[in-house]
Image 1: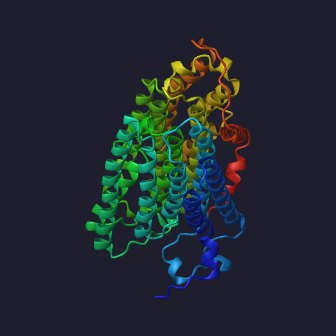
Image 2: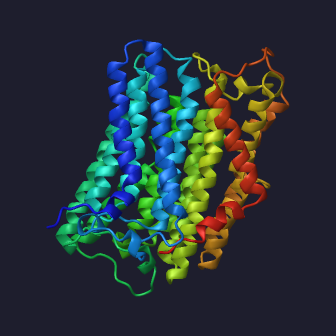
Image 3: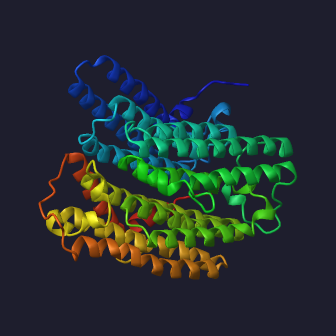
Length: 499
């Protein structure tokens, strides 16, 4: 076999190579820069630079008019071409993951200034490692490469969740996530083995070929392997009944890492789900709508009774996984390549809108959070409008976007998902999603009521700490409103997707 990398291969891998170099540089800076304040500053800047360069390179790839395997300029060599999926939707996935990690970094700078429990070099190295693993996972054309990417970013998250080593809740959350995640990874790996034993191939096929009526799914051992595979990915995506870890882990993790998990992990998991649809057994296709409805109901009902903001957003994330599952149901139950195109586009629009909205919410929570955690409850944000108007306004805007109220990005995200379900012959799922969204308005509006209309016990101002959090909050609020007022800003780039 020819193991030579061509210049086109290096172009395709440029963002991944940048992240690999960034991991090495950050570790070396942490090792050789002696003074702790200077070391932390150098590490922060280096992490930011490498993430920004990787994001720029991915955006440049996306900006090429005919970027993709059909363009002779970007034909990959035999080694990379067999394992790497260089198509517009995977490049968009890389952009989302790098952008999410970059915003998490901005949130982290101010959050870490209030914490004395973190080893900063380790923290920033693991952030880069997460981005690297997630991009490898969503760009895989081979299930072995997909499990490698999954494990790379999962191990980074296991450590980051338990980074506050002196807090029992953080260690418990890390252990719980590690044990359940290890089981999920084992199911994924066992599923790969069964698929290979049954079909003799672990190559991920093209999405455009899915959904055609009469196309046979995997059979025998391969069908069992496909069931294991999807069970593992449903765990990562917080799809019920594989969601049980989500509220406890979100609450125990550092707030920036909760933001990263709620957006980055969900993005990577759902993108890989869309790539692997040909491995889904026909026998479990009828269960997909059932899991979709169950996830929506569990998420919304669970959120109704929460007073802790991180747990409330955890159950909200489960509900939003259910809405994304409506798009996934349209993908696997629809007919024709056009259906696949509209379903994938709707899911990508939803993932991007959800990412900016949830990152804004968690940026505000991290900004407000104090060591006793009293400020991350509903009672803790009473009268927030008087204590910090900017934080209250952005938190309310995020809640309205998560509820799907116009003119926000969340409204158009739900519109895309529900309209796709109707177009593909799944109106029942769309109706259930709309009704559940109406229920969700109740607990999202509670955030607005507490922040704006209830008096605070302590009305002393909350001062902004760190430029990073303020930049992140402002960027995400602007993105929510910009997409809400002009959805074509996000829809137009997505029309270039070719499955």
